[in-house]
Image (tube, rainbow, N blue to C red; front, side, top):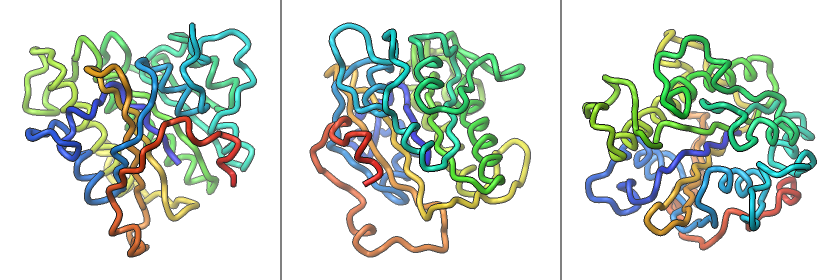
Length: 278
């Protein structure tokens, strides 16, 4: 099971959510052809830590600081805690510095076995002011999850991206657009490119850099990917959740295939963490 917390990838950029000249062809394909798209799920914060506390702990945005940053937040129920009690290995990957907004402290004290951050990337090929670029973080995630899968144990990973953020810098040669222009639209295209790389690697067992690898042998028939995205103009978050089956020889049930687009109105904190095991 993997949860993506994707920086600022607002619904205004997605072709499958209404944009005529889409900036997210990789995610459009995943949402409409391979996964499930939930287009009416809303969150109630406007910063990354608000997304973290909602998605991972079902906390509403309380007045003042996020639960991620508060003192005495070392006994908070999280998705990672639930999974760890059921025997899952847990890992959090972030291209930036774990000290920022107390992310490392929150993660390792509340269910994550390991927190991989910028200092754990030796000689990264490209960094922004916020940290290591998305594609390197995502490929490191592939490596880490492959290693856990090879041990024959279930795993739960969370990946927080950084590239789609001012000053909108990214490596040359990944997309046709010139990174020197430093535009949000181009950063969105790069973020989509990096996500596409991750899903292809997870599907095929190749990371795109080191050649062939063994296919992941998941302990489930399916993995879940949630992407928390920000609607900047309205200052509210909208989340897209996609269900992705990794075992190609297991067909989708008819009722799932016919209902790839769901418009259920919901909020990211509607489901209490303690109910996940029901």
